[in-house]
Each structure stands twice: as C-alpha cells, then as structure tokens.
Image 1: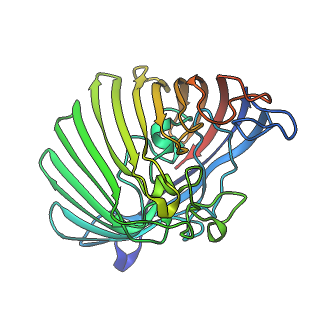
Image 2: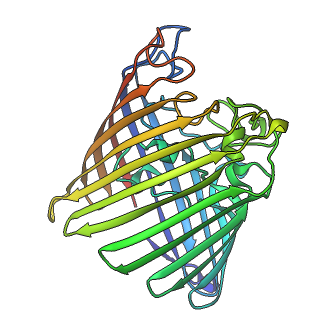
Length: 362
C-alpha cells in the first residue's frame, strides 16, 4: 500500500501474519527430550506478525519493521514467535538510509545480514522449513552498511555487532553479478575482527529476553558462532517458471583459550533449492535438499561432530493476499556426533517434520 505522508513523500506499507500447525517425530517423553529438546510432538504456533513502513526513494530514506517473528529449521523443535529477540524489542528492522549519488547508499541501524540465500521471514522463502546453512548464519544486527550498484554488479559491506552482541567487531560483505535476468551469482563472507566474550549479549527467545541472553563460554555456547569466520556463495538460474539455486557455505571458529574454544572447528553446508510456478495458476512448489557436516568439538547444528542429509518439499497456494501451504521435511543423521540424537532414548537418526501453514500478506 502507498501512503501520501506530505513532506516525507510517498511511503510504502506492507506486512503479514501467518501461523502453522505441526507434527514432529523424534520427540522424547517427559524429561527425556533428546536432541529436539521437547516431548511435544504436535502443536500450533504463530510464525510471523510483521508490518513494515518504508520510504524507498529520495536522498534520505528509512525502513521501520515491527512485530514478532521466528524461523523454523528442519531437525529442530518449533518455538513461539517473539518480539524480545533483539535489543530493539519489537522493532525487527529500523534504519536510516542516505543516497547521496546514484548507485550508492549507506544505512545505519538495526539491519539485516548479507549472509546466505534464505530469509528469516518465512514468506520470503519457497519453503517453511530452513536449512543448516541458515541456522549458523548471523541475522539482524546493529551496524552500518554501504551498498554500491553499477550495471550487473553490486557490492555490500557492513560493520556492526554481528548476532546483536553489542560488540562492534563483526564485518560482513557480499558481491553479486547478474549478467541477465536468468542468471546471477553471489559470494558472501563474514568474520569477527577481534574477540566477543561470554558476557556479551546474543539473540533472545520467547522464554529468555535479549537482556538476559548471553554468549557464554566454551564449545557448547554461542561463542563459536559469534567468533566465527564464514565464506559462502549461491548461483541463481531461472528458466521459464523454474528457479534453481545451489548454495555452499563454510564456517570456521579458530582456537581461543580465553573464551573456552580449545580447538578449531567448522561447519560445512551444501543445499540445492528449487521453486516451480505452475503457469499462471495460484499453485507452486518449492523444495530443497541439503548436506551438512560439523567438525570439531563445537556445537554448530544438531550435535558437535554431527553430519546429515535433509529434504523439504512445500506445495503452495497463493492469491493476492492469502496463502496456504504444507511442508514435509525429512532429516537423517549419517553421523550422530557427541550427545543425544532423536527420540527419548537419544539414538534415533531420523527426524520428520510436517507443517500446514496459512497467512495473509498485504
């Protein structure tokens, strides 16, 4: 929707709300919750409730997005949407943008990551469930971001407090090349320029507000993530109604005895995304297949040292404002690693997630 805001010019207003019902395999019983960390096999949750107000043009621009949100990664238990994950509270995004010359912008505030292909807002993805690649990436953070576009090339660099730690030492960048409408390639990377200690903050949750959430020390804390270095990339190819996107990503945390990381460790992910629109109909289908491997003592995804494969398939129906879709995901651990696996006995290698979702977009 477009609003005439007088001296501010024309503002764009967009948003949505969606929720889902789910069924899980691999849950535990009572206090024996296993890798999923829950004994609840079925339920319903709000996924996103967001509204965005944006001034997208002119020399001075701004973006405000508020509400509650949560992603849902295959192989994990669902969590309630929350507005207490960030230091900005219900402000999911809040940044000011200056555009002094054509092709160049600089933004400052609570702003999104440049890492990876998937979005933390599920309706911007072809699937409800996200991958291991997404799970280990930085999301929103406070920072300053500069973007330059010229013809088929674009580049972005960002310096801020990756993972919302409050410590401004996290550098991100990406470079994209799109020679035509059917092909594009993006290379991205990120690194901690110093050290982020255990008392720094990290993303909160529905049960633990940001003010009470801390990085911690040692391999089972958030310390490997916030002190990591990442390199990745994806290629997008479109032919008619079909879009294919392969993505690779490697994340590494070096040894640092002061924060309890006594050995180096890494996480590797490879995913192929596919999305097909059935002509001019309201139906489409999204799918992805993944491989992931964690190496070393640190907890990246599932368990330290775990490896596995996964697949997700999502048929979707969408009109102008309404959408409904289902997602069936299957994950198999080829290596369990250190710690429990799925089920109350902690020995299960397989996990299945079924989701039925509906929402309104405007």
